[in-house]
Image (cartoon, rainbow, N blue to C red; front, side, top):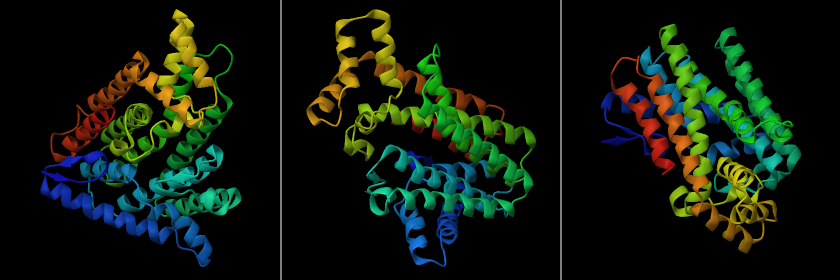
Length: 336
């Protein structure tokens, strides 16, 4: 058994493994090339997160989707570079909005160079992604523009919060579909489209990507509470400390409103307080780990992963389909 890509995805087919590894290497080279500037400082800032690494989840999905056509078609690797550049650009902007100090184990760009440089570097990466897209044709430009519009809409909706009378859980899932699902859907779409796969396959892999993206983000929500730092590679309760109300927290609030139990109300009060205080943060984490809201969020994660997997049913059997199914299983395993 071989391993490639994020989440410990296993690829049992040697040809697929070789193709995927070669593709990911080419993507990495493409990312470094796309983030070079005549101005050394811009190169340093733009390559800051590229060199910090990452799962490369979106490029991997592009490469696997391309297996349903010609995986070596000229547009495949550039489109994988585009989705990763877009993702990286959003991280620079997210860190400014969240006032984050660390990203991928290194100082965030905003912590290192200030908010203005971080925002402008994100803009630089969007510009470079657009430059590559221009060579991939007007359809690719349109698809990326629509996805980017959804992504920004999701970010705005998250910032604004649910309107009066709107279910906070529904609002949150809509935000995730836009913020995370949209770009992962494009990853599946670009891979299939650039490889010349049938239109029906392009549609299947777009829908698969959207649902997988939801499962992927919801698994992160669960991990943020359930894992220790050794397991996940990130500090537990980061979202809590930053005041981000993820699905388990929303379910706690929903249950407190429905049952009115003293314990749930007390937990809600703790959640509303200052979670930069280490003792308070540790107490909230302990309570959330024992709360049924966490298991409920886990079940929703599993549901989205199962929906993603079921989308693949019409695809021809083979190593690529098995790898895409494996991504669903890996996301579920990640959520526990």
